[in-house]
Length: 314
Picture 1: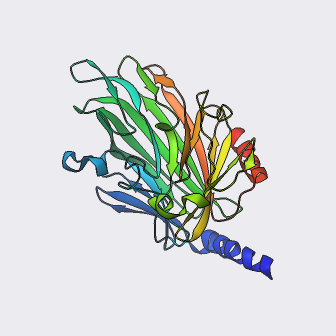
Picture 2: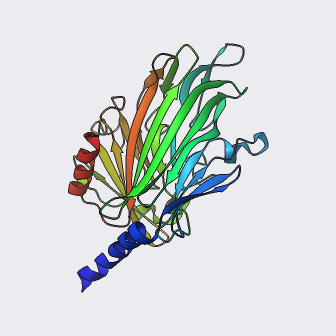
């Protein structure tokens, strides 16, 4: 009976997701666009353009994930502990660029100092009963408005056969400037995930991580490069935390074609991910791809390894 109780939500979702409901996008003009499956919200792309009078709230686009009921965010937006942390996001605290007068400037697209990111346009979006995708153009700008990188960012959403949400993140960075260096550190650069500020406020000590070399760690325990030298060039890392009384699992998959070495960081309040050093030139764009697996079903180290192997061969 207990097994049937655990299986029923998954079977119900598969039936709804494949035969009764489609993915769909609903746009709130100039602010955000929501992804739903039937009537249940899944994700939100926040793209409101940077407002100099409301800079902190609007200085970069990002994605939210909704909880299992589609009512509240599991991810964090502006404000709270480290306001620059935003759900699913990508940036570097050290970007070498040139301003409108061709003078070099060190732009920080992580904290958005001396620069910021702006959504320019939706390049494409699609949705059906199987998956949904959205592709956008994002400008990385110096504070004077100069675009030093143009990003083509695409996210694809689907539910895998286990009933977990799979999110593919693909990004291409191009430039017309001579050479852009991208750098930072594992805490302030790269592709990262940040959970709701509720975790920081009340449930951080219930957060635990699962790693390729260690397996499941104790609640509240974290490992970070450079203090922990083994936190580099990982194919995967998983996080488990509690939001709204529900435990969630997020698996972070790093593709082998991404720049290496990569360096990993994790926090009990729910921010984790990796970064690398790289550069972009007019004849050498930067392409990266990551995958997140998200849901309420428990993930084992064996599950994570299996998901990673499937991603690496793509």
